[in-house]
Amino acid sequence: MKIKKLVQVMIVSCGILSLAACSSMHKSSSDNADMADVNGGGAQSSGLGDGSGTFGTDGMSPQQLLAKHVYYFDFDRSEVNDNEKPAIYANADRIMANPRTKVLLEGHTDPRGSREYNVALGERRANAVAEIMKSKGVNPDQIRVISYGAERLAVPGHNEEDFKQDRRAVLVYLQK
Amino acid sequence: MRKFSAILFLFVSLIFSNCAFALLSLELTRGVAGAIPIAISPFATEGSNPPEDISAIISNDLQNSGRFKVYGRNSLSSFPSSVHDVQFDYFRNLGVDNLAIGQIRSVGYDRYEVTFQLLDVIKGKADAGQQAVVVSKKIEVSGAQLRPLAHHISDMIYQQVLGVRGVFSTRLAYILVQRVPNGPTRYVLEVSDQDGYNPRPLLTSKDPIMSPAWSPNGRQIAYVSFENQRASIYIEELATGARHIVSQFRGINGAPAWSPDGRKLAVVLSKDGSPNIYVLDLATRQLSPMTHDWSINTEPTWSPNGRTIAFTSNRGGGPQIYQLNVATRAVSRLSYDGDYNARASYTGDGNHLAMLHRENGVFNVGLLDLNGGSFHLLTNGADNESPSIAPNGSMVLYGTNYSGRNVLGMASSDGRVQIRLPARSGDVQDPAWSPFLS
Image (cartoon, rainbow over all chains, first blue to last red; front, side):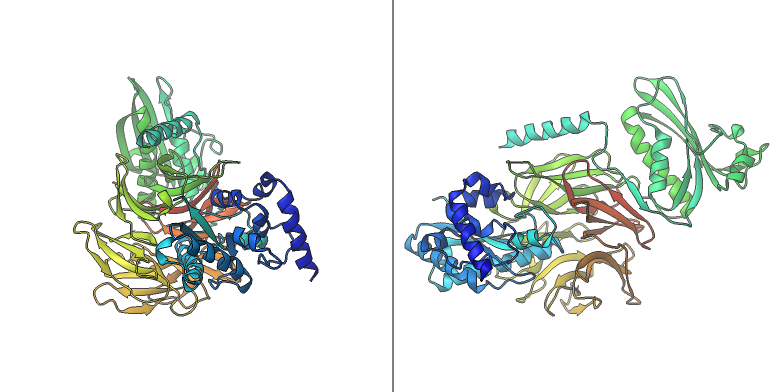
């Protein structure tokens, strides 16, 4: 479990590091906006090259879970990974506690394949997160889903590590 | 906001008009052994210098079609500009069958008289050269019309020699993506000439734009824009830039495809939970569901006779191409090779389907023979996307990745010719080839 340790260390150090250093790892504007209110939780999508691919929630504090707004998916899949669920539950609780809050769930894919098919795949990913939130009791009227497919990549690169960061759903709290 | 767009448009237009280069430039990456040899003699000029080198444009057009081997300014030692100057023996010895000659005469006020003749070298004799003339044309145009005229001449040569209508006067639509360091990414829907020249922006946005689709008459483009964090389908007039929303339901509004008569738009909507195909009547606004299930159904494309729609569906597991009878809505599967086939489009004769095909994790463009069922690849390697067929069926245009950037590629429908159109700035993707425009 050396890798888990490493991830934990990275989470802590990223909290200490300046936001600029964190967000410079990300090119997507939507992710940057998300990063701004994330602080420590920014580590989950930083992809610092640990190669484990587990962008999950192991060892995160309740605060860090609440701050995690990016949930990663496996290649060609739209099922939510179990290790992403605690962060989704935490945010579902927050949304339920604030009935006037509206959120946007963005679905994204990596750049390979057909663009419109990727839009459909991205919507399934965002819907999968929305379904978990609804099953927790979130009012469907508080959630809107949009799929960008492969049109808003997290990173512009073309290797497997980049693709891992692209395959995601992003939770965006909309202003009231 | 409108004003801002107008200023931005002006700004972008200025940038482009200031650079003498095209945004895209053609690069023949693989040619054909059996290309037809043709000589293009540099056109003689009389009076003030014309702003365009017509014979160079014609040479580029024909060379990049992959169908011709061009002998031009650098490979000829005789530059005849009228029939009685032609030494037919010289051209016969070169091994060319056809020779294009011409003159450009400045007649003042930015007007030019262009004379063009295509000669059959085999028939030609020094004493009776007129018998060799197979095409002859004299046209007066302005300086700005010289480039379109050159493409028109290329079309005439292509038609005369190959018996097929040329596509040199057609256009391309595509999405230009410019990633700005520390700033929002810029998405631009652009239209350029078929050779990449004259790029003109139709829409500039900080949100993604995708899936441009030409109306059959070439005057409008439908596309998907994600403005205001919503996917909407717009139709924009090319001449005026006026546009209107045709579809803005909850969820996906995507993959617009014009019916051959231009009256309907097949679209993909997920308003009822899952992406399904609908046909929207543009006059009555009536929406007819074509598919209705819980799988992914997307990327509709009409057969040339308008009776069937091919589309991508994962109803059998992975994405494959299916065909839908528009009248009965009966569905049958078309693609069987490989575990990923998507984004189909019909050739003009309706006999083939170009599609995106994945094999061993690599995405290529393939062509399926709908009569015989045989399938062959047109490209080799790279992550290709969005195949779009030229209106004469000779080439397939697609997005590809080259040196880490998205660029456009073209392949001949027999797969023997491949051309890359590198972008000079940013990523160029999601292309659509226009129909014939005149």
